Image (cartoon, rainbow, N blue to C red; front, side):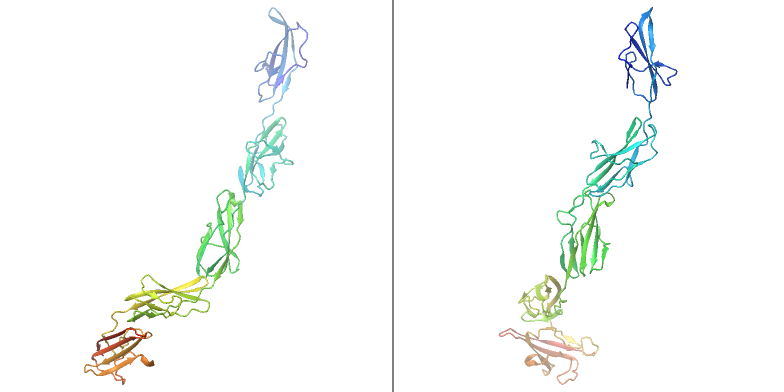
Length: 462
């Protein structure tokens, strides 16, 4: 502050003047030369921290080194008010700053801590705002209390509380309300139709995926099973995508997405509906079978698929042969190999499939060399496994050591094939001993092969 005389310059004396400025803490005593340049007509005081009194003495003329004319002005006081203190602000529930999502309303901003102090004890408050942390602040109309509640925001804003008291003013610390962009790209993939009890393919974000918020996302999946109401998914229900190892009922899914402080940004996806397609009938490929076939063929014995369903045969890794008609449930398999041959029977209903396999074992040595018809339910019957009666005519004759035929059976001419139970053709038990068989296998195909086999059988009753 610059102090100067009331008039432009003094009058009287010799017309030549010198000056001395003095200061006092009370205005009544202890006058000392003023700090700084104090011998000019005007005086510029330094920064003051307490009230200070000033006066100026004017000198004119000198006699024997002493001033002849002097005059001292009345004193004036410069009153110094203390600086304003305790002007601190914060946002409710968040501390110095906060984060919200675009379109949301931030919490109340308020003065915190001890009451305002300093100045003249009377305070005028004004909330100010800026769109930049380093930009200029403008007054907010009507915001003159110790608290301020902002309307919904679409961009980040910075706030200060301005306090005026007498000649003093103060600006508070800055409260920043960071505004995140709303989440976009939160929808999930479209509806699916899957087969009952089969896995649910992963449901995830529609490309290119979510954006906005703070760039980090949290998820919660919900499901509505057969319109039973929405419920949180407890297992694997917080990942960005959701899948399930098996699903059997029509289900709807939706996903919540969250981002930002206290999940301030959030949204809900579209609803994805999963339709359940019916499965085909349980496939029956026929029983595992042991056969002897001179043509190395077999008629499959799968169940005929119901109307609207189809079947298909495939050769598995440990199988050989050729399939005459893969779509026929009772197709013929040709060129079987000795040993195990496995085949897969698949029944389809639309896009849904069920599968089962069957094993056909082709025998090389298939005639047993003995049996014991003693009624113990174990090995009581002479059974030639693998005789393929559907494709072959089979004739069996049993003779004793004297060459007399004691038993015979055949499937020719509508006869019923009968396994030998140790009795003769009249139903009488034969004695134990060694018997001989003659087996003739003739293919039912025209000009098909004929196989003749013979050997011995030990019949033992004890």
